[in-house]
Image 1: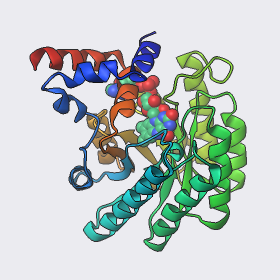
Image 2 (image 1 turned 30 degrees about the horizontal axis):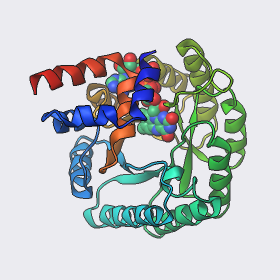
Image 3 (image 1 turned 90 degrees about the horizontal axis):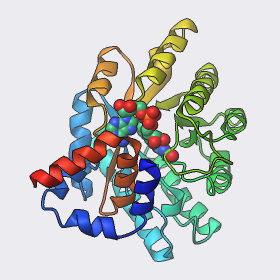
Image 4 (image 1 turned 45 degrees about the horizontal axis):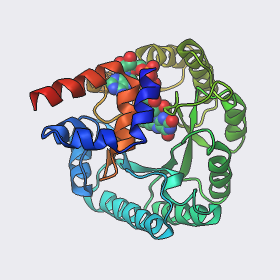
Length: 303
Ligand code: FDA
């Protein structure tokens, strides 16, 4: 209920205007978003690196319908890749296909993503393609497969809330694809996704085991301590090295757990979003956890 209300509100500008009218809003956004420009994201990643945590840049943007704007996004990602090289920070990049033209034309999207993947290959870097809502899943896999045919430095995301994902993982493993496993962040109909948290978690555990057993380097993306414990236990039982996979979390969420996992010798990567188009991302983070809404409300009252 809370999730669908927030997702509904996130589609209108009313809540944004309302939130913008509070002076303290920036400090609230900063809980989940590293900043509005690249330099701020680089600083955030330097701080993470100093704690033994690697990162993934996300220039915030999605559902772009102008071809010119998709090309701007490509330029921004090329700038990001250059700055990773120049600064020597430990980070790769994550992209969304609707940011790169999926809603304009599939060929444009493919060419835009290819430009980023090719530049990353030249610089010895890696590009992760985020997964969006289930109307985009097939198209995202199609473009990923085309890219993966020629480039190894590209990976994909799967969502354990979708019924289809077990089959998708089987296919992806045949390609030798590097996968990020997450639960899924969009408001999906019961025809596409498991309705209960228990089913999503059960599927998450099943998929995590398939991935870890594959011998390919994957990302286990979650803040859920139960999922993390299940991963640690399974890896230990199968003598899978801590260096054979990585945990991934979102910027600003469960920093205590991020540091604890590093102290235990696990690999940890944090997804670092930045940019002016923070709103849909921010709303998804609020929708995931009622406590975040109280956090915002408290700060708005204080402000
Ligand atoms: P769950 O939602 O069950 O939460 C477990 C616990 O984690 C909560 O009890 C709370 O303690 C903590 N927690 C979770 N979310 C929180 C929040 N917003 N604020 C504070 N605490 C929180 N999704 C997608 O559809 N496509 C994608 O490409 C990606 N990419 C991605 C990358 C990375 C690195 C991560 C970590 C996540 C994603 N996601 C994503 C988002 C993912 O699908 C999911 O919505 C969130 O990670 C929340 O799910 P959890 O696995 O954390 O479990």
